[in-house]
Amino acid sequence: MQKRRLPLQFRRDAFLLTLYLMVSGVFLAFSGGGFVVNFRDIGFSLMSGAQRGIYSVSSFFSGTVSAINELSDLRRKYQELSLRLEDYEILQRSNADVKAENERLKGLLGFSQSLSIKNIPAGIIGRDPNNLYSSITINRGAKQGIKKNMPVISFQGSNTGLVGRVVQVGRNTSLVMPIYDYQCFVGARLDTSRYDGLVSGQGNADAPLVMKYVKKRAKDEIMVGDKVITSGENNLYPGNVPIGFVKKIRGLDYETSIELDIEPVIDFSRLENVFVLDMSAVQAEEN
Amino acid sequence: MGRVIFWTIVTVLFMSLLEAAVLSNLAFLPVMPDLVMLVIVYVSFMNSSAVGSTTGFFSGLLLDFLSASPIGLNAFTKTVTGYVAGKFAGAFNLDKIVIPALMGLGATVLKALVTWILSFFFGPSVIAYRLIGFGLWLEIVANVVCAPLIFALLAQFPSLFVRRGNPA
Image 1 (cartoon, rainbow over the protein chains, first blue to last red):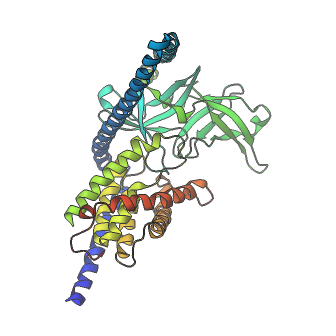
Image 2: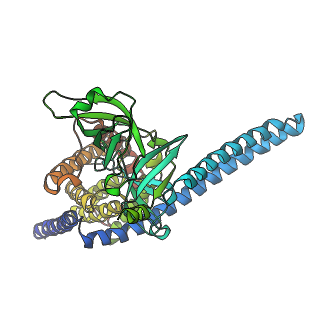
Image 3: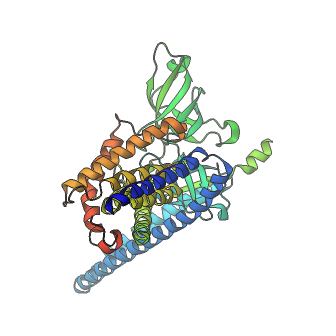
């Protein structure tokens, strides 16, 4: 009996393996095609909706835990204060927190209003679960007017910088490919010497960006610390948006171009809010 | 079999959302452990290749929807991982630390190998691990460390993750 079952068991295993690998292979092969993209859109909307839910729940719990901690802290302090009447210190601290938060929000609001291009503010709710890929999930989607390939920028401290572009749009969430991704390519220009090149990432937010195809004769005119901005060609990205600063200049004698290591303007490890730019008006004007 | 697959996919859904919405935002983690892969390895080892490849395929598909990777990539790698892990079902006794850690190591190496092979066939959209980079090695360490924890957690629920009457 046992001897009869084993070959059948093997055939079922092999059949399932072949079936699943074939389906996965078909998906992979056609992942740029219409059918699979639509299928992916549906799946992305469902999954990212759940992701958004999890994020909200985790935010709620972390907020609740913080609130409980804060409450017990306040209670302890109240008891101390009722004895010592030293409540001014806490009031000052609260005021400082509110003031700092207010300043940050005012900065973001001012930045949003100062942009000449229509923009959609969004918050980051997740990042890619696969270590080899580096997408960022934001909490705005087709419902808020986001479309595929829209550029994304951010404002940190007093700096504006390019974040990436939208690669996938769900109903209420979108997937952004950051500029440090392997597959992200941005037409760029050196702000002072005006030489063009192509900036791409190395798949890691901590690794510098690489600007390729810069003409070799530019070597003497480029200095470490020079600003790199978007060139604005093809209207994929708006022009003159800062990308980063030259960190290192590399060039070999037998090559016709040089490569530059670029330190991004944006610190991606503490990126919280972004602005998705709607370039349709700009593109319509130029057409 | 259906019950095990259902609960595995529910667990994988939770793990993948945990990775995407929580772990990925922790700046101090240089890489994320592949919790989904570890769940699949455990379930496959405790059941069979058929369960492993089925849970691997559907779990990978869920991950594909959350990631910028081409759709089908995670489904493919997780199917192979589940199938291979299932082939070891009942082959040896599962202890608390060494065997889970070794299985985490083996599964991560297998994933890197399958991804590398796929990158030949499907072009630059499939990114392969780089042997000289730290990414692969850090992920191996993360998975080796997390595997005993995940296995111990899942072992608390044998009625959900092991088929009735399964000798494993």
